[in-house]
Image 1: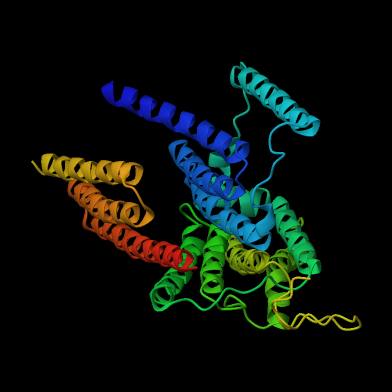
Image 2: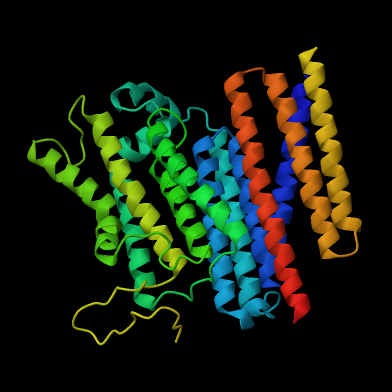
Length: 324
Length: 93
């Protein structure tokens, strides 16, 4: 009894802190401070997911929501030193309208939640998933949903990621690289990058039966790329551009290939033949991990790295450092 | 008995965290704040991990907790060094 109350107290504290940090992240005029608050907010949200017994989401939130998004925001700030303070965070009719719309959305969401949670005979998706889990080829329900039950959705998610990175590549040459790291940071990078690669491989493999999977593993690899880039490695450990193109599309390619083959076998698109599910899921996830990692690394580099010269255009962006 | 020992370790660790937090809030300049933060948190986290490992009792989890501590130790020491170095550079200008 005591223990339950203690947990409830901790949960209340967590909820309050999350709201407070969220407010701190959007309300202040100092953007650098806001970004730091946002990173702390992301870590707390990860703890919230862990408390809700959603470790997959907690991992993804910590790695992508707090870690990589934070790194992206910080590097964007570095590019725009003039924009470090924004004077129109508060006030202005647009800001007021956005706040109102947000409040209305939250109220509508709360209303829907209250009504659906209280429904007499709810359809529990979790029960259906648990019932079908033995047929999915994997033991982790999240992976089963993402790569089997709704694999089509995940294929489209990878397409969204590809579209996003194409937009980033179209923006222009890469951001100014960082200067070479000092001996201490360089030592840490040399030590952490292999560890991150190892962790990514573990998460990819573990995704079949425990929390993990392509998105978390890809984020780990991308974190290694971010570390390398911060340490002064201009292309963040990525291979040469032709290989980058292959890696970027690897996830979708694997998905579509499997889909086309299953269609050829007379099954539905992405309906895995019996007994093959586990292996096919691992194959798709491995390709998706590489694609996600390359996408996130290129997003962090913030544009075309050296060597991305497209034929037929007067594109001379082979030099790195230009930001014009 | 081992539970009691573990709880003792955790509480000592929390005391170090509290001291470090008070140091960050109260100390006058960046370098002494960094000193308070890294020293106290590293020792605090070490004691916390040791306490949790004792309470858990499993060897595998003890290794994992030890790894957590070592990683945070390396990262926070490097981060503190970088922040201090940057502060010195800016002071020189």
